[in-house]
Length: 77
Image 1 (tube, one colour):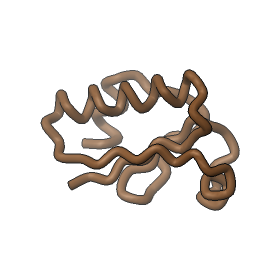
Image 2 (cartoon, one colour):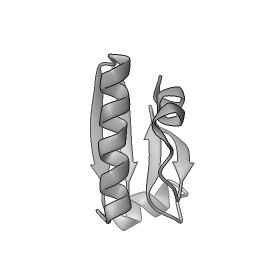
Image 3 (cartoon, rainbow, N blue to C red):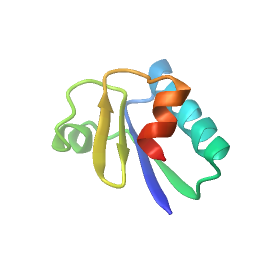
C-alpha cells in the first residue's frame, strides 16, 4: 500500500492536488492511504517551503505546484 501525503494548509491548490492524486491513484488501481498534512511545523520539518507539496512513501516528490494527471501517475505509480 502506498502512503501518499499532500502537504499544505488547505488552500485551493492543496485541495486540487489532493483530488488529482486520488483520481490518478484510482485510475492506476493503486491501494493507497492519503493523508493531508496541514501543520506548518510538520511541513517545514520536511524541508518544504512552498505548498502544495506531494510526498510518496515518505519522500517529497513535488513542491509548490500541482502536476498534471500523467505526471502524478508517474510519481505515485
